[in-house]
Length: 353
Ligand code: GDP
Image 1: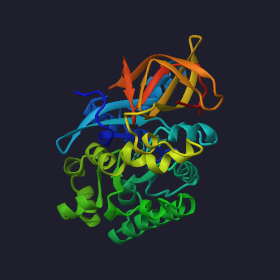
Image 2 (image 1 turned 135 degrees about the vertical axis):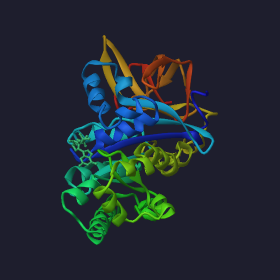
Image 3 (image 1 turned 180 degrees about the vertical axis):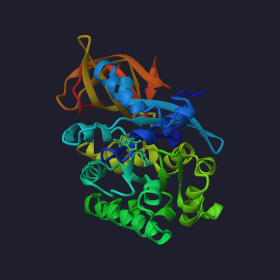
Image 4 (image 1 turned 90 degrees about the horizontal axis):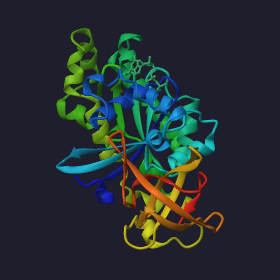
C-alpha cells in the first residue's frame, strides 16, 4: 500500500465543537474506520481523551495527527485527522492547527444548538479557509428527552442549519461564502447520534425512504436497528472523502494566508514537482530538541537544509516521521499535501522553502 497517495486521494481534516456536544464520542467512529480502535469500542474508547493525555506526556506528532488509509469507491485514501486545541481562547494555536487541514467537521448538539464555542471555532476555521461540514449530533435527545414530533424535529434541525449558515455568511471569505453554505441536499450535513452509533446524510435518507417519523418509531421499538442501517463510521468517512476538498483543490484558496507576494504555481496546485514549501503548525521541545508537526504545501520534504521565510535564516531538517495507524514511522521523504513530524529548529507558525 502506498503510504502517500496522489494529493487527490489525501484528506486533511479536523473535528471541532462546543464542549459536550459529542466530539470525542464521534471521533471514535472515524478512528474505528481507520482501524485505530476496534469497531465495537467506537463511542466507548474515548480515544481523544487518551490522545489529550498523551499530549501531556507524549510525542507531539502522535498527538497532533492520526493518519490512516481507507478504501472508498475502489480507491485508497489517506486521511490525516488533526487535533483541534481544546481551548478556543488560544486562538493562535487553533488557527495554526486549522492551517494543517482543509476541512473541519463541526459537531453541534441538536438540543443545545449552535453555541459560543461553535461560533469561535467556525470563525477561525473560515479565516483559515478550511471548509466546514456540519454534524448535528444527539438527535436521540430530541426524540427521547424532548419527545419532539416529526415536524418539531424538522424545524429544530432547520433552525440549526440556518444559524450555522448565518455564521458562514458572516465569517467566510467572499471567494467561498456561497459555495460553503451547508445544505443537506449538498451532502455537507450529517444527522447523527454518536452515542447510539448511527448517522446519515439527506441523500442516504432519501434513498432508503427514511423520514424522521420513522426514527421516532424505531426508537419506540428497536433503536439498535438504526445503527445497522446507517452505521456512523461509514457516513463520517464517506462525507470526509466526498466533502473535504483534496489538498490540490483546496490550496488555491488557502495559500494566500501563507504567502506574501506572487504565489508560486506549485503552491497553488500542491504540485509535488518544483520547489519545496512547508509550514510548521506546532513546535515543542522534546528531550532538549525541537519537534515540529508540519504540512508540505509544495514539492517534497526531505532531510536537509531549508530557509525559514519568517527570519530568512537556513535551518537543517533532521529526521522525518509520519504516523501510520497509531505508530510513528521514519520516512525518507514526505510529498505535498501530507503532514509530517520532524526535528528542526523552528517555531510554530513559520514557513520554510
Ligand atoms: P465533547 O466534549 O464534545 O468531546 O463531548 P463527548 O463526546 O465527551 O460527549 C459529552 C457527553 O455527551 C458524554 O456524556 C457523551 O456520552 C454524550 N453524548 C455524546 N454523543 C451523544 C449523543 O449522540 N446522544 C446523547 N444523548 N449523548 C451523547
